[in-house]
Length: 405
Image (cartoon, rainbow, N blue to C red; front, side, top):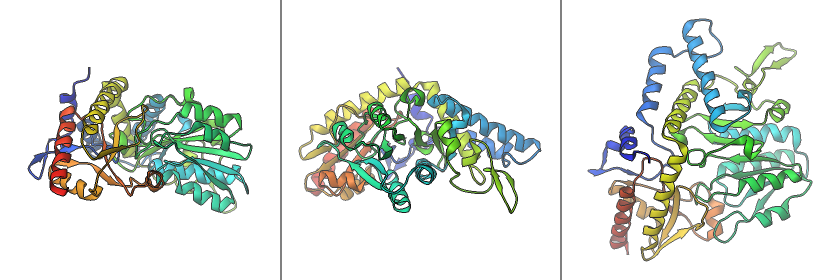
């Protein structure tokens, strides 16, 4: 069993008071807080070895480069990629998806080819495909969700055909917390020769990911949602596919040789890392992964599942509260509405009680439209949350009801 008190003490921001109340942070789906180990690592890099990577011949540059490439090895092992060539550092999940949408689209998508996405995707896994389809005259097709928001595998199978070039779905819905059946999705898509991109932004911090076992073609996630700093993310891609794709951006580290007549691109993974990489961010991600590994992802998952079940039970007891996206296959997030109370007003009052939740559409307007609502209140959990945090949320909601009903 993990020591939650010790974990909570590792996160300095959680020790503060908000409006005189102990902070209850239930917005980790938007971004996670950072343990002192990550904060101190960032401080150490800037204090002791900061220097641009892959450029200098001096000691600091060599040390900085070594830490950056070691971070790539840490990520490779974390997701069980075959090679560090398959680990591309990006600014985040959004850039990773945009990279695939551009580079894959340039090479493999032609007029009338089809891209499939799920109805419950967030905007970052919708807009890049719309842009690519407009540029390449492809067709974007939406996989309808079941009434409760779960992925409808039968409707997905009915949409697959030889024109399907790529399927892009979230591992876990950001607005609902529902875990999609990505193993079956990948298998079915491959039967038609389609490639599969998994958006893992809401998954890798909660679930063990093994990209070789999944057999996905691409997997994307962000550092700031797994306890690292912002502005860093990862695109995993199978090496044979990445080798074929054209670069996403030009300049800096993605260059091998340049003349005015011709440019030769760098080998993987640098071919897709134009400009100066966020090397401090990558090193912070490595430190965050080590922190997760020290605790144990399976133990974290047990704790978060226990917390989710407890919160679901307690929230279900509140009159007028409706959980959006009920499913047996969920992790670490609950979205709900309160009868006759706007989610924004509820969020403001909860904030005054020291409780941080997310309100609104959660960058997933089509998912809200599916349920016929304008938004929800979302409580999203991380390893540092406790049942006491849930109890304070329940008390806060009851106070909201008294004040606004």
